[in-house]
Every structure is written in structure tokens, then in C-alpha cells.
Length: 402
Image (cartoon, rainbow, N blue to C red; front, side):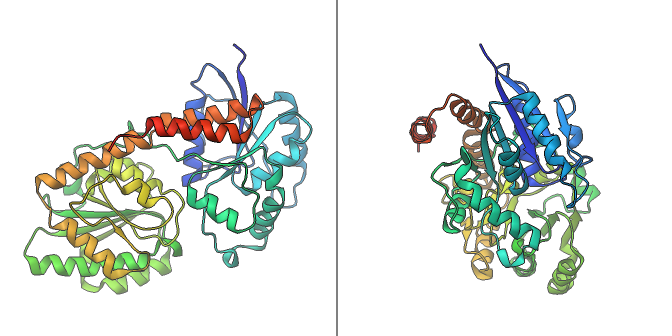
């Protein structure tokens, strides 16, 4: 059987959600006997680079914006390897892959990993990439989005999305799983029976940390009036000094119940501390943190943006899990509704259902198999319309019964 030759390309392997999904896809494709895989990055030295050790990887060593010689190096990589498909992540590599792969026979697939981008906040270079990618979108052989929200966003911005397909992110449930945390709680100074709400997100404007702080303050004060178990909030994610300062000011004397722990490489060790995984973002495509937390047995409470509802909704009605973005009151009511289930069988049942949701609907195997089917079909010149029908029928068959 002839192997399919796939070139996976991305700007760099610095820490980020898109980069982590790219690495996960690379690791899994490398295990497939039917795949001949090569990896390509513009820049080296990223924090995730060690995770692709043993997989053939070429770094183009781009030396900055003025370096255009990397284009010749990239074209040579493509010409030497002769891939059936080039699957790129993010605007730069989408554009460069199409440009350098021209007339070399490879199908070029764009990867879109974001949505609801505020173009006014983009740098001049980022705006240039955005609009160049828009111009070239009709020449891609396919576009893979990680959410329907992303597909809709780019469509509204005038991108050519008739060849777009959605492939949800996959979550490694062997890495993200429930585990014993009693000693860990003690090390962090958290009461053993405390009810813990956690957020895993960098301190960026769109993550709405001020709402997180306001809701945390109200929830902590509410728990004190109820004479229930202590409430603790934990934040994991790269801190931004100005946003952190604003949050601490909002929290006032309740800040002793809120731990800002910064970014963690071993985030899977921290998720099991949470009873609830919280997302307060007012824009999101596919939130890895919600899905990872749920895989670790955390019950989700999320703002209704991107695919957050689809990830968090497993048909439960024992508590309110969804609130409108930027709505403090609605978010607080959700937290209260879950807090009332403390130490109950319902709470433990919800935790089990949360993990089951991810295992059943957002597995790594599902993500890899769907991606590989798309790339293989493109290599065999199957039309996008036929492929859409096949994927739709496949999803209908695999959907868990209510």
C-alpha cells in the first residue's frame, strides 16, 4: 500500500493552543503506518519542540521580516519531499505553503484556529497576512477550521469558504484525567474540603479576567453568608501585570481566596484540583482548556461563545452551565447553582459525565482519523462536496445516542 506523504507546517512551536494541537496531530500521524510524515517550522527553539523529537523535522530558520531566503528553502523542502498534501496552521504558513508549493503537485490545506478577531487590534504585519490570506483562500484545496464559529467568522469577512470543513480539536484523555490531589491542595494552602473554581487562560483582554475577578469576589462573599465550605479560585495562565493589578484591586480583601499561579507546563496536574472549570471569554473558537478540564473531571461553566456550549453541554440539567459573555449576574448565578451541589452525589455524577463527554466526542483518535481521511481524499482528488457528505454521514453514525 502506497503511503500518503504529508507535510505539516507551522510558524513556531512556542507554547499555545494551536501549537499544542499541531504537536498532538504530528505525534499521532507519526504512528500511522500508512503515513510518511515531515514537519516544517519557520523558527526553532520553541517550548514544545522537544515533543516532536524523533519525527523528521526541518526548521527554515527564518531570520526576521527582511529574510526572504527562507522561501527558497521552503520550496526546496517541498520539492525534495514531494508531499501529497501540505497542511499548514496559521496565516503565515498558510500563505507561504500555497506560494512555495505552487506547481509542485501537492494539495495545500489552510488551517484556521481562531475566530472573532478584532482587526483593529492587529499589527500592520498581521493585517497584511489576514487580507493576503483572504485573497488566497479560494486557491487552497481545502480549509480546516477547528470550530463552526471560526468558519462563520471568516465567511462573514469575505473569505472563500466553500471548501471549508470543521474538525474539532482532540483532547489527550490519557494525559488529562482525574488524579489524587489531597497533598497538592495542602501544598497550595487550600482547605481539603474547599470548593474550587478554576480558569486556565492567559491574561488577555478577550479572556475577560475582570469579569472573573468580579464574579469570584461575589461568589466568595456569598459562600461566607451561606456558612458553607470555603470557596477558592485558581487562575493558570501567563500573567499580564496591568490586568493582574486590576483584578487584585477588584478582589480587595477576598484576594486571599484567589490564587494566580501563572503559566504551567504540567497543567494536567492542576486541573484535578478544580471542582469547576470556568471560562469567561467573550471570544473563543475551540477552548482547549474547557475540554481538558472536563477530561480531568471538572464540571464546566462557560460563556456562550465559539464552540464552548457544544463542548460543555452533555444534556445535564442539575445546574446552570452557560452564561452570556460579559454578563456578571448570569455568570454568578451559574456558579451559585453548582456550589449548591457541593459534596453531593449529583456533583460526582456531573464530574463523571464531564469526562465522558470529552472521551466520546472530542477524542484524539476522532480528530486524527477525520483529518487523515480529509487529506487522503484530497490526495485522491475526491471532491470537497463528496467529502462533506461522507463526513456528515460518518458524524451522524458516531454521535452518542441521547
